[in-house]
Length: 152
Image 1 (cartoon, rainbow, N blue to C red):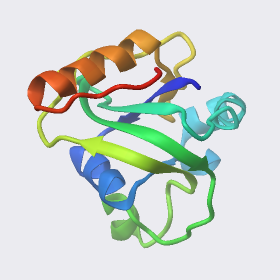
Image 2 (tube, rainbow, N blue to C red):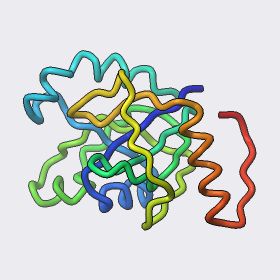
Image 3 (cartoon, rainbow, N blue to C red):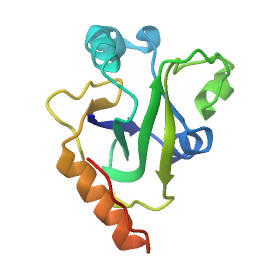
């Protein structure tokens, strides 16, 4: 199982991802960065597997707001979900990931800007270290009375 970081420009997007138990990534034609990094994105996206872990952070601050366990990747849902999609009346993030479990906090669980060497700019996707996931789980335990056990 792998550990991933997904980045968002808004807390609303993370909240909606939590409510829908899913995440979405830009399509190739969204902009210059997406066109330049398309091939890397597709190759990385295809590595997302069930039971992988996803840390969701705010792109500009590194505030970590969510942790999810991936259920599956790519499912076709052409319904606008995120605020910008609804505003424009079209799907902007068609490359989807579903979660079997997602934990979300309105306030940052912890602050750690995760941007590894394989981070794909324009898509907000990269590989996280097992230590990042372990530290986030420890922070969740410290903020709550939950005890969490499992493989990272």
